Image 1: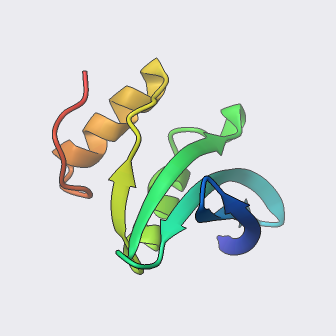
Image 2 (image 1 turned 90 degrees about the horizontal axis):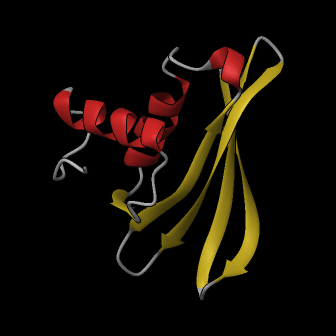
Image 3 (image 1 turned 90 degrees about the vertical axis):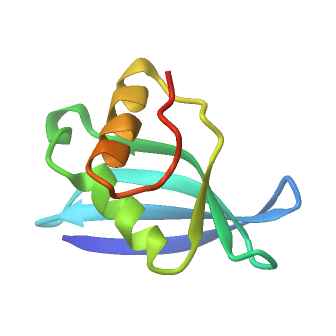
Length: 101
């Protein structure tokens, strides 16, 4: 798997980035996120994984990569599928937060 990060510019007075994940040369997904460099926090705006590549750990891989550099902050604007995934991250102790319903 290969992760790449790209700076997109300033949005909502914060630096915005996109992380793209490739597996064997195929783009399997990406996420957009904002960084608050003052507080070293990262707010994930959204994660999109190709339908044929879901449930293979790709979104979790991107979260873990961001955790290496930042404390994660969430906007809680999840799809139904996203809510289930987020709560599984908590159950598996990948992130610390409250369960979102």
